[in-house]
Image 1: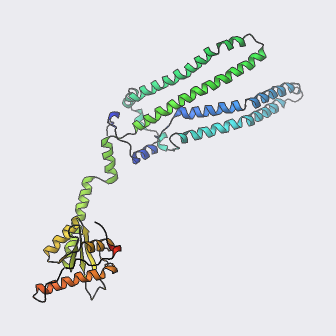
Image 2 (image 1 turned 135 degrees about the horizontal axis):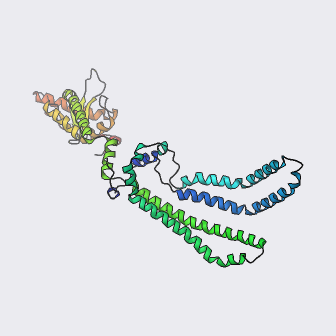
Image 3 (image 1 turned 90 degrees about the vertical axis):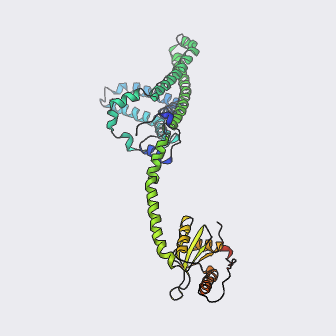
Length: 377
C-alpha cells in the first residue's frame, strides 16, 4: 500500500501495530538521553572522585620522579612502574566506568523500554533506492530534525557564551597571579563550566525526550485503511465470514430438518427460545434435548415444528431453564423432570383429544420451576 500522508493518520495505533513496530526495532528512543545520561554520570563521578584523583596524580608524579635514578640500574624498571601506575589509576576510576555502563543500560529502560530486534540491523535493499532516498531528504521529518539540531546547538553555545562573558574578569585575574594559583583557579573554572554545561545538557535532553515522544506518537498513528486491513487480517475477510456463517446455518438447518420432526414437543419462550424435546420411556430414563436455539435458530425450530405438526408449548421460564442447563443430545436437568412431565402429559392428552378421546387438556402456566433455575431474558 502506498505511503499515506501524516494528515490522514488520525487513529490511535492498535496493540498489534505497536507490537509489530517493536519487532522492527521502532520504539520510543532518545539518543540525547542515552548520551547525556552517560556523560552526566561520568562527570558527576569524576567530580566526586576529584580529591582522590588529585592525590593519586600527585603520588604518580612523586613515584615517577623518585624512580628516575633506578632506570640506569634496572632496564625493565620503567615497564614495572608504568604498569603499577596504570593499575592503580584504573582501580580508582573503575567506579565511574561501572556507573557509566549502568547508565548506558538503564537509559533505554527509562524511555521506551528495552527492545532487542534483529530486524533493525538487517540489510534492506530498498534503502539503496535513490528515489526513496531523495524523498526522505525532502520529507518534513528531515526539516524537523535539522531544526531540532539547530535548537540544541543554540542552547549549548548560548550557555557557553554566557559562561565566558559572565566569568571574563576571572580569566583576566588568572593571567596576573602566580602559576600555582592560576592552575587551581583554572581547575575551579573548568569544574564550574562543566556543571553549567551539564545543566544545559539536562535542558537539551528534556527537549529531546518531549520531541521524540510526540514525533513517535504521530508516526505510529494509523489511517482508516490501515485499520480496515488489520481488521481483515485479524478477524478475517467479512465476505468470507458471511459465507462461513451461511454454510454453518445451512448445516444447522439440515440437522434441524432431521431432529425437530422427530421431537415430541417444542417448548418456547415464545419468541426468543425454542427447545425440542424427545422422550422414549423404553430407551431413555428422562426426556432428551434434540435441538435448541434462540433468536434466528429458535424461529427455524418453530417453523419446522409447525410444518411437521409437532406440538408447541409456551412456557417461558421452562424454556430458558432447559436452554441454560442442558446441551443438545443430553437429558434435561433433574430438577426439571416434574415440569417437563406436565408438558409431556399435556401433549399426550392433546393428541388423544384430537383423535376423539377424552377432554381438551388445560394449559398449565405455573410449572413451579426452582428459583435457582430461573433465568432472565
